[in-house]
Image (cartoon, rainbow, N blue to C red; front, side, top):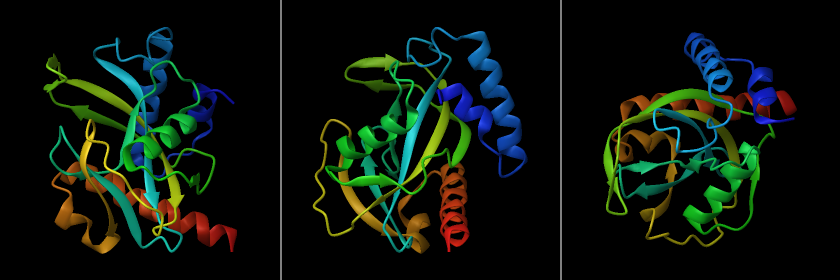
Length: 191
């Protein structure tokens, strides 16, 4: 299944996702050649991994160099149509954890997230939108973590009830709580 089919197959969990799924699909139709590339300077697909432990009571986060907050892992598709592969690759690169697996092989969240203008590697990146496809990933909290200095200044397991202490982006906290609920629903449905 390609990324467009995967997004089409995703069942939104609320009105926000229903609306944003529609916009994302329209944008894919309008920009089929650049939707997976950051060269599409207004909006492009990204893939994030919300890494949880087996008990689903902690999240592995990185202290993001640009946003100056604890955040999930993820990045640009850069032409890769396998968005789950992108989420897994970014999770490993950003945390150093080698054994990360998806809780489920399907999308767990669809969101349109603003990225404010910033400097990256000495160049100005203008404000744009991330058409965010997110997956819930599982890792062993005993496995060693490693900081990726190019991307972050810390890697840490955070108890889910303490997310508000570490994340200073209220709009992203809404997404995190949605993903936590999705993870719990997935496990409950498997039981």
